[in-house]
Length: 86
Image (cartoon, rainbow, N blue to C red; front, side, top):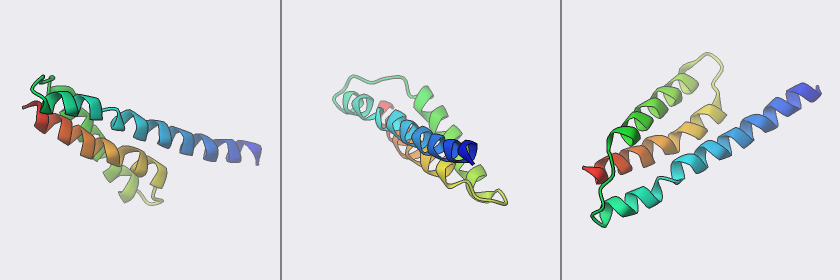
């Protein structure tokens, strides 16, 4: 029982950390918009990776909501960072 509770808490902490990781694209997006363009490849690859994880999490037999929630912001912020870096 303790292990199951630990895993549940760990999954939500990991979800929060993943969301914060993708929200950290905001400074890069702001730099891109101000004219100091960054490399668009990394955020594009991150967005594609996150899209694949969201699809996986939602389409498997037993949905994995924490994985989907953790990766969804990566799609949005990754694409925004990519587009603003062009």
